[in-house]
Length: 210
Image 1 (cartoon, rainbow, N blue to C red):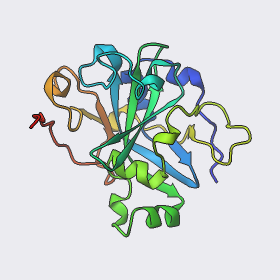
Image 2: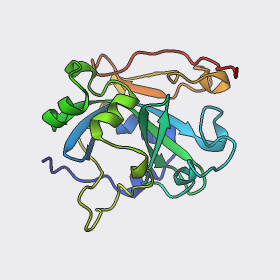
Image 3: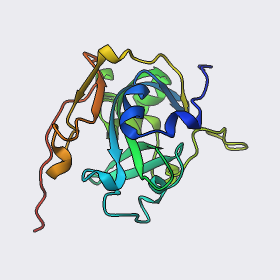
């Protein structure tokens, strides 16, 4: 298991657009698997029409309104768990969505969880990443800045090898419709340029109620 130092809460106590690109190259470990983060998106709560927290707190989004250094995990499209790291000040409801990564440890576990898909696609997208790490809604609200004393598993975000800003690509967020999907106003997706684990871009689609 890797021994690089856990990132402190002060690292996450900043605006999401500052934290997000600096998470690239960092390591996330959970349940026997470690990944190197290669793609993320920033969200800014009530200031951001693309955020789940734009219209205020709900039981689901409650962790986003707390202090930085906690997880926000949500269910989407009927079968995917997506993992966010809460950042910023208490009440700002800011977070960084973890979109993709490279598996560094726990290959056998990921292979079994991902059902025989090719290795390039193990963690290529937020739902796939959540499945590879075996994270779900019961893990929303975990403190990843302090060791979980007495707990059998612990989520750790550690130093890794930060990606130079010159190697970070920037663009619109994936699948976000409406004003929040405007890549000129919200160029808040960050990824390691040229990395094969990064997911493909697709624009948001407005879903009409039947």
